Amino acid sequence: MINVLNSIFGYWSTHNTPSGINWMLGSIAFFGSVGIATFIVTAIEMLWEYYV
Image 1 (cartoon, rainbow, N blue to C red):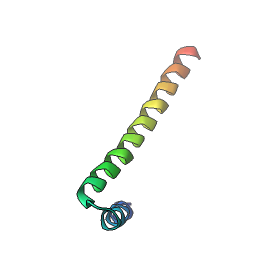
Image 2: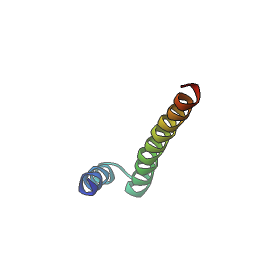
Image 3: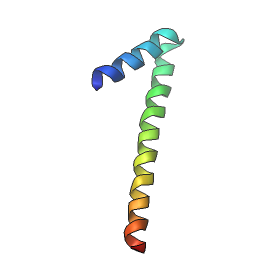
Image 4: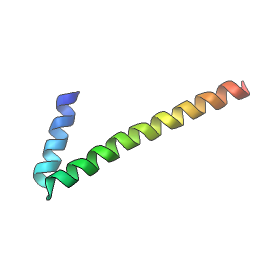
């Protein structure tokens, strides 16, 4: 899994300029979307337990 992420970020960094900024934005977007999805799932579970 780590190797897949590294290859994706490596592809982004080699095919975009400046590479460092694009790698940072890509990783922030990736981890941000994961965090938002986790937050939404947690909120749904809390509401579900509250109403059920």
